[in-house]
Length: 301
Ligand code: R5P
Image (cartoon, rainbow, N blue to C red):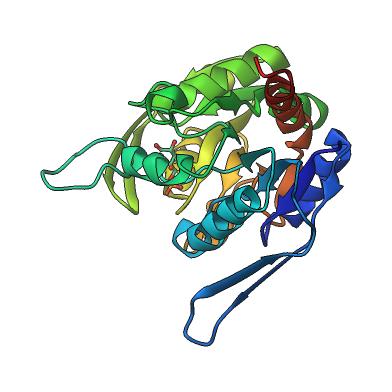
C-alpha cells in the first residue's frame, strides 16, 4: 500500500513535493482552534494499515507541537502501521548546554516529548554542535540529511568566482562540504555571541580574495545578526557584496531588512521554511532518506 503523507499548516508545499517523490497519497485533515485557544484535529482520510509520514517544519514550535502530537497519536490510535515525522526544520536544538545554572537544556528535553509518539524522524541539517548526532538525544531511528550538495549546485550555477565563508566554527561543517562540492575555496571566521541579538566576528586579512564573490553559508538565519555583522566586515575589507545562504530561514525581527541595509547582493534559503527567499529544494534529499526508513519498516529489519 502507498504511504500516506499528512502535512501540517505551512508545510504544504514541501509536503506535496515529498508526496510526489514518495509516490504517496496525501491525507486530508482538519485542524482548527476552539474559542479558548485549544487545538481540534480530525483525520479525514483514514491512516489504517498505512505507513504515515507527517511533514511539519517546526519553527514557532510552541504553537505547533500540541497539534502535531494530536496528529501523531491519532494516526497511531486509528491503526497506522508506522508513524514517522519529516521535520525539514527541527526546533530546540540550539540550547544544547546549561550555560547558566538552572537553565533547561531544551535540546535534550524536547526529544523526550516528541519521540514517544514516533517510529522515526528525518530532518535536514539540525543544529548539531555540542551534541554530535541526533542519536545522542533521540532513541528512535533518525536520519540527518544535508543541504550541502543542493546548495553547492545553486552556487555553481549562479555565483561568479565564489569564496565560501562560514561565520563561525560551527558553520565549518556546512561551508567545507559546500565548497568541496562546488570546487571553490572557503574560509571560516571566528564569532563570539554576546547576546540574542549581538555578535562579534573577527575577520582576517582578505586582500587576496578581492576578485571573488563572498558566499556566506549558515544553518540558521534567525535575527540575521551573524550574517549582518560578517557582511559588514567583508565590505569594509573591500570584498564584493556578499550572497547570504541559509539552510533554514527563520527571519526573526527585522532580519531581512537589516540584511538588505548591510548591502548583501542576494539572500537565498532552502525551502525547509516557507519564505520569499526560497530557491533551493530539499524534497529530493528528504525523500531518499524517508524511502530508506520506510523500507526498513516494511522489511521489519
Ligand atoms: C549559531 O550557532 C547558528 O549556527 C547560527 O549562526 C545562528 O543561529 C544565527 O543566528 P542569528 O541569525 O540570530 O545571528
